[in-house]
Length: 220
Image (cartoon, rainbow, N blue to C red):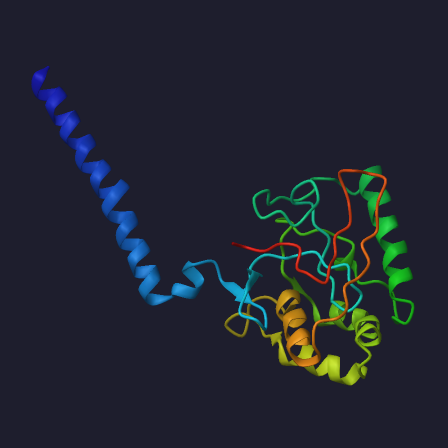
């Protein structure tokens, strides 16, 4: 019994040291040496050098001078990096149908000069609720609103979008896409930060609008 107990204790200690201490430290060290930017969260900064978010996490924007990402079901107010999830609502869900109907109405009201139907991704959440990308079509659909709010030619805004276009991964996986946060930051760098959008008070205390001239999620 003593021999068996001794072997079990030694095995536990060795395994704990190897997998609980040495392995994590080695992997963390390699990550910091090989790709430190990715290992530290792919953080991005504004024109002042202040960290305003992560390239991997979507943020909500309500100021008309910014492109809007997909809606989010992550957390109570959406875009909560600590509560990544989808809505888990099926196509027959009345709650989902009501939410999509309200979003369609809002998007059409906010984008009166947009042509064509509202892109489906602008009214559907991603599985994570934090997808930072939109298709080129969804970006261009919003372009007239952004250009008008910034008082610049639509062609100049489109040039910024085109400059931030991401191709397929390894040339074959996925589709072309645009990171909404990076484009909004590029717009601020080129045209300046727009005036603060007035905060609108809502009756629901759990869902108050914020001043979207500032980014809604800032990673400390």
